[in-house]
Amino acid sequence: MRYAPRLGPDPPESASMPDCTGPCGPATPPMFTPFTLRNMTLPNRVVMSPMCMYTAEDGTVGDFHLVHLGSRAMGGAGLVISEMTDVSADGRISPGCAGMYRAEHVTAWKRIVDFVHGHTDARIGTQLGHAGRKGSQYRSWEGKNRPLESGGWEIAAPSAIPFTAGCATPRAMTRADMDRVRDDFAAAAGRAAEAGFDFVELHGAHGYLLSTFISPLSNARDDEYGGTLENRMRFPLEVVAAVRAAWGADRPLGMRISATDWAEGGIDGDDAVAIAAMLKAAEIDIVDVSTGNVVDGARPPADGLFQTPFSARVRAEAGIPTMTVGNIRSAADVNSIIAEGCADLCVLGKAHLWDPYFVRHAARALGHDGLAWPPQYRACAVYEPG
Image 1 (tube, rainbow, N blue to C red):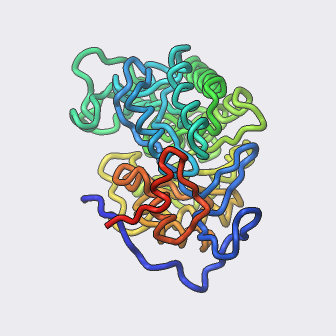
Image 2 (image 1 turned 180 degrees about the vertical axis):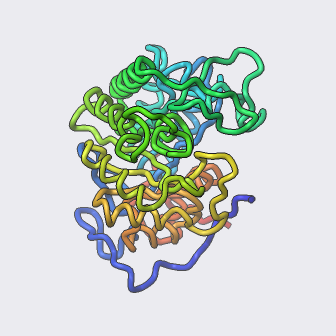
Image 3 (image 1 turned 90 degrees about the vertical axis):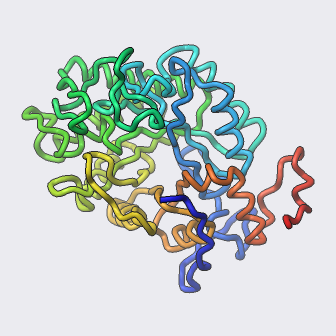
């Protein structure tokens, strides 16, 4: 399906609007209200989604990533999040994936973080992950879910179950494997702090390693890490605890989850609420609510804000802040979601690829003058597009 920006209706008049304090006035659109998690305050509710670019060299990011992330921060997003940044070389999806497992990775990331902090009001986060059974593959445009024919690496997962019939079968992880991966996550979080990131999100969705522990469709273990939801959450929660210790108590920590597997016998909405409650108890500050991509062939709805109801339910029933993601195409979508209490932050991917200045253009369209242009671009303050 081709991406198409949605103009959409205005938010319903009956929607309850967030309180506006400080620089906000009563007419401030909901998307332009600030939001605080621990020591991080965002200027608005719009987040650039983490999206794999497959353009790193040996895990080291470069000029492409500086422009990719820097331009969306310049474009007004309140928070930009890096692509899934892998905690070890054997945790990568492809040879082009970004990493946070060597000293030179910290140096490369710090260049980008410093640019965002030095030239914009945005905050910047990194999404730390491990590909698990989806690792050692070609870049997406070279063949989706296609195992590397040479130069690959051994993949591991909770159980020896391949993602698809054409994918490699992972080795079932031992306790020693789990200890190493837990420590890799913690070390990566420490490096993220060294690089100056404001926020860390753990990738616990979409069929990557932590996600495959959580779903019964990919976890067939018969030890204390399989079976009940509490057991399947045990290893992800061990990772959360190790990351929190390394990242620090003052910094915000989030986790992306798949709130449903869209498959019989898999994770469902009830499970998502229980998962979020466990994460809240483990000092996760916000849950990024996505869905699917855990098992091959599961097909979610193609249209509409199909993931937002899961975010709304998690937020209401687990009592934890949420981000919602998926098919959010317009400022009207964002304003409606925030005003109706369906999420605290809206995560936009394709909209930011289509228009790096999505947020600034939305401010102009809505008549919101609280988002100042950078001084280098001040001519845009009086520019009227034809």
